[in-house]
Length: 178
Image (spheres, rainbow, N blue to C red):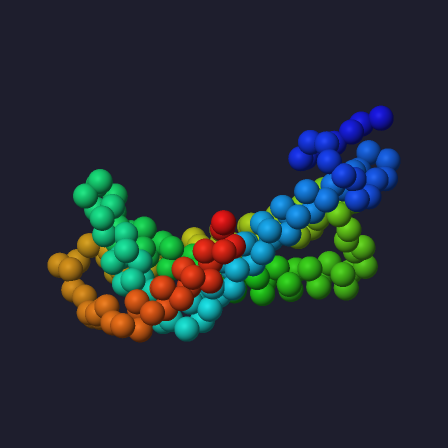
């Protein structure tokens, strides 16, 4: 009989065949899921309340010290901003592919993981690559240049509201990571 232990020997909450669910594992799983959901909710809040250009400028501001190490800060900030912008598009596309598979009569479950990979995950990856190639071509054709003579449209200023929001976010996140 195959035994799987994640957190050593403790009090078993549930046991079936080779699967044992420990109380400690359930507690730490709950803690990690809470941390992940908190970060996702804060990221969603920030991206929904901030314009993409302001988000890029803010990322450039916070990543500026990496410029002294030799990293292209502007390129990294633009890439992160484009990635964040495309997450809802990829999610909507995943829902469409999932629904299309269900309409075709596909019964999708975790037990059929190879089917999930070929029928859902692979099309999402291929469509994402195709979209990114189109975006790169569009940026090329429009003459997008990351290194012009440093024209900056928005001059961001640090205000009390920024300090308050960061301090409040840190206070909310601090108990989750302790």
